[in-house]
Every structure is written in C-alpha cells, then in structure tokens.
Length: 358
Ligand SMILES: [Ca+2]
Ligand SMILES: [Ca+2]
Ligand SMILES: [Ca+2]
Ligand SMILES: [Ca+2]
Image (tube, rainbow, N blue to C red; front, top):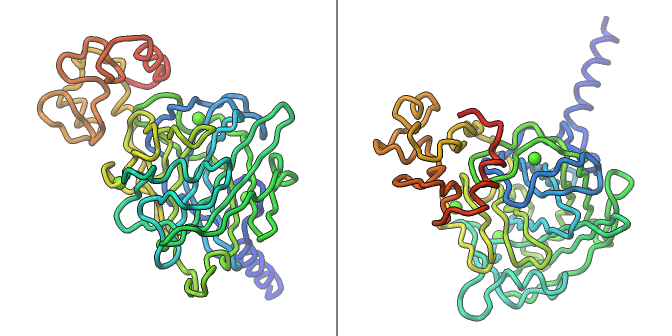
C-alpha cells in the first residue's frame, strides 16, 4: 500500500511540475486562462484545421507562467498564413516604454518602428502602468510553409538590441530556436474560438496557437532587471507590415472593429485592460447572444431580453450587457456594423453572425 501511495504522489507531482512542451499546444502547466477573448475576429475565421496553413487570424486566450528560468506565453488561436503578424509586448521589469518610441531596433523590415511615434507625438500607447520592455513577433506563410520570428529590447531611452530570431515550421518539429534561447512554436489547427465579425465573441476552450519561451536573462540587458517574478503581456494580431491592427487584442476590446493604424491606438482609451498578467484568472465569457445582431431594427432589445442576458438595461433599447450596441440605436436602418452607412459590410457582418441565438 505504501508503494502505491508513493507512486501516486510522484505521478501527481510530476504533472504539477512539468514544464510546457514547445509545440503550439496548451500544456497543463499553464493552468487556466489568464484572459479570454471577448470579441469576434475582423481578420477572418480559420476553418482549414491544419497545423500550418490558416485562412484567418484570432487570439482566443492568453496564458503566461514563469518557470525554470523562462517566461512561457501561450496565445491560443490562429495566425493567418499570409504573413499576418502577432505582436507581443512584455512588461516584466522596471522602466520600458509606455508609448512606443521611433528609435527602437530596425527589425522585421522596420516593422517595430512602424508602430512607434512617427515624430509627431503619436505611437502605440499601452494601458496605464504598462511599460513594455520587450517586443516579440511571429509570422507565417509562403508556398512552402514557414514561420519567422523577431524580437527586440525596449529600453526606456530606446536604442536597444533586436534581431531576427529564426525560421521554422509548425508543431514540435518546427520550433524556432534562437541563438539567445528564445523559442517560438505554432499550431494553426484551431477551427473553434471566436468567429468572424465585430461583435461579442468567446474564445474559451481553444488549445492550440502560438507558444513562446523567453529566457529570463534576456530582460537583464543592463544588470538592472532583478529577479523576474511577474510579467504583463499585451498581444494583438497585425497585418503584414505591422501597420493595420486587427480587433484581436488580449485582453479583449469588448466588441468592435479593427483598430487600424497601430501608431494611433491608445489602449488607455479602450475600456478594460488590453493586457494580462501572470496569475490572472480569466473572468466569465461574455454571453455572445448579447451582441448578436439579426435585430436590424433593434426592436427586440427590450428590457426583458436584456435582463435575461444578464445585462444592464440602459432604458432606451440601445445598449445591453455592457456591450456596444450591435447596431445604431435610432434609427438602425440596416447599419449593422455601425459605420454610418448601409453597404455590403453590413451583409457580411450578418452572415458572420449567422447561427447565434437572437
Ligand atoms: Ca505546449
Ligand atoms: Ca517595464
Ligand atoms: Ca475561430
Ligand atoms: Ca484599456
């Protein structure tokens, strides 16, 4: 009996202590999600189901743990194999950049600086208290499928070190191993998570995507990092030139359209945290029915159905569940995506929402 108990104890310990395997799939070591996507993807819903090629991009959840001298980051979802980018910013030490500067390393065809201040005082700005210390990015595509990765330091005063990390493919056999010890893995198999659109979505339950391991020593370029015991992660999907940000940010933006030119994006102006922290526990997924708009004339956004969705009724039929109105309050006139006119994009939005409960 004693032998059996010992064996069981060892088995449990080994599960708890196992480090993530770099392969683009979620490991038990990550625990529950630190953040779950709440917004449908404006960059297409991938339905191919292969580990390499994907026909859409989304971030369904964010995970991060510090273990074994690494910061491990898992972002479930898809990276469309048309050289879409996932841009990841990490705040893990003192100093850093709250607004991206324009004198960061020229890496990835100067894509990092494309998001920074163009000299006029703009530049991608993070939530209050988030001062990015490192940027990492991954992309994929080609006739023969390949993944590529870059990274850069983001010192407070700019002019840090950055480099092309390397090239790989999908899955465990395709991991990118950088000279510095950085590792990047991708598994594009997901066909679940959020669908195409701009409304409220839910990324729960996705177990494949982008997985990164960052050796902690990389944060200590000046001997001033100290022991890394916590980290914040801001990640989003961008287009090939790092110049058109999607609506796939984690933490989510609470429904809405693509954020477009990153240098004009200020996450302080978007409700909630567009980042997550090691140790965060994701809240409940928003009810996707709360912003599912077949109801083009908004006639059904009544107090009763709003309360049934667990939302707060604003009294005018225009707003429910803390979500943006799925269509303009008065009059709707078919402008489903709320961009001010009725055109083909409204039809596409309705099609993208097809299947949601009313
Ligand atoms: Ca893994
Ligand atoms: Ca920092
Ligand atoms: Ca999806
Ligand atoms: Ca915010």
